[in-house]
Image 1 (tube, helix red, strand yellow):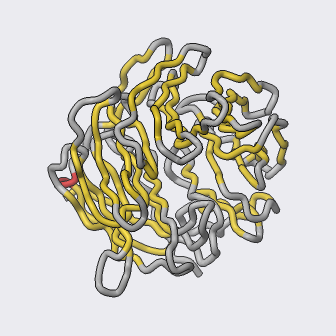
Image 2: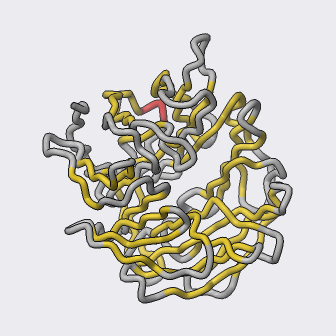
Length: 345
């Protein structure tokens, strides 16, 4: 049986207005104020997808060879939601009612209540789907005819609106939202894999803004929740740097160097988690949390990847910022889901 983790306390928040929507902006929690409360393997199953958090931070969904499962992080039994084997990308809608499921190039919407699934017809191969921070809509990243398109899609699949497409011969990846849900960001690559730009796309479309890329050899990028700072892993799995800098240019700050293979912003936007392969003499991976200004760093776990000689890794913050899911369950590689919980010092 997997070890169970008790629910998390909600972090202190401030309420601000963004347009016509009320948004929660979480109070920053610098790394020096946190301690590791517990690290445990969440499930014994081999997950084939990322770990997708519910918006209240009390549940995680993941895909495996047997289907899609929901873990409540408590004493309740894990629940099998749908018999959709080997999905590679999951997402949980902000209203908590729907899971997006990318599987074999198709996108489906699955009811969290009863597991009923509806395939969303898209013209091309679905690669990613990211829900807006509010409501029941999101964006699908679709490859078709040598370019990438972004579609706004509703939870029922009835709305499918094209809002952006790359030029032929270019691809978009690393789809992220800023916290108001007004803008999404993608990284654009040419056919050689060289990053050429970062592009901001307005949810209502069709206007967009193109920013200069912080580097050419970028393995992963993500814009912070405020939509102002970009973090990127520059290099490859053998040698890379985690750097941050303002969108559009300016000085870059290096936060870490080594075999950096995954990173993600905390919901507060004040720190990042990242994974480093070969963290010790035994070849284990190290999971870290670091302040975005480089102030402090905390080692979360020395983690032994359980499947594959050169696995990919993923890190996924809970919406509260007090827990971190991690593991080799990335969609490109598979493995059990692990979790670390944080508390105030």
